Amino acid sequence: MSFLKKIQEKFSSGRVEREVPQAPSPSPSAPARTPGAQAAPPKAGALERVKNLIAVGSGKGGVGKSTVALNLALSLAQEGFKVGIVDADIHGPSLQQMTRTGRPTMTDDDFLEPPEYEGVKVMSVAMFAPAGQAQIMRGPMVTQVIRQFLTQVNWGELDYLIVDLPPGTGDIHLTLAQMVPLSGAVLVTTPQEVSLLDVRKAVHMFQTVNVPILGVVENMSYFVCDGCDKKHFIFREGGGRKLAAEIGAPLLGELPIDPRVADSGDAGVAFVVSNPSSIVGQAYLEMAKQMKVQQAKLQRSGDGALGYFLLEWKQNV
Image 1 (tube, rainbow, N blue to C red):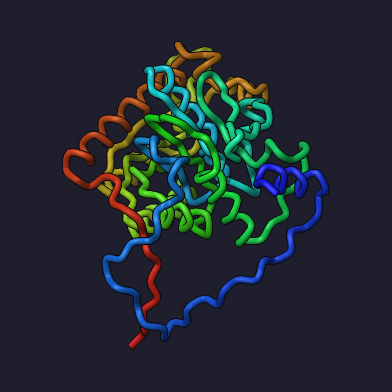
Image 2: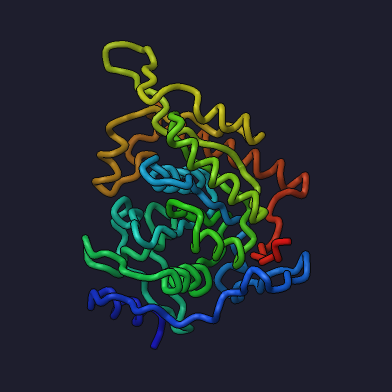
């Protein structure tokens, strides 16, 4: 049975996925693998014509990461690039709500054909499930879905494939780092220290798995009221700039608060599509340009797309 049929059957039934027996994990006393060894590359055919894979993460939820990821993808598309986006937040997918795309179809060679939104190819597990139904899956099944989204989707020729990561630093993040050579990561935060605490953990995770940091985006930076031109820093000021300085990465943008951003997402219309000339719309476009500049610098210096990460167990002495 094809993957598409399997996942449609699972979500239409609403049954709980039983845990799949896995091979035992290596014990801490097991010998380390050969240094420098690489994990097996993904199956050819799905990603072979994708030039750049960009992860968008935050280490936590509630910072507007998915909104930033979608508008980043659309901003790149508006500049003429071929773009796709994967909703890797399996337990809390939101891209389907923000784009209202339909279900993918199946090609003759058993690949999923992703639907498009404003020219951007989109893939999300929410396309297979009724609205409001939870994705009740354990780690092995979640990992399998991500693998299929990367290796059994007809992405075609893309300049950028944006990966909208879930909160945390767990299975999905390691699966991506092991399977594909990520070109870099964009970190999304809000100004307050509570947000920065978790984003720093995401920084450490990306550094551990050899993924270069392309930059920091500070969302909900400030608010400009209707009656004045003054910036009101509701959630404190300068958190994103502070983090960027700490890790030696550029600040890609400070996105102001605009209630229309939430309205657009709820209506299934991305903000750079509905309000491209607004302050926030222009900030998204500038964010995409700055990310491209940083990626070009990393590629020239040889620091981009560092290869596959191999998780090793080492004996504690």
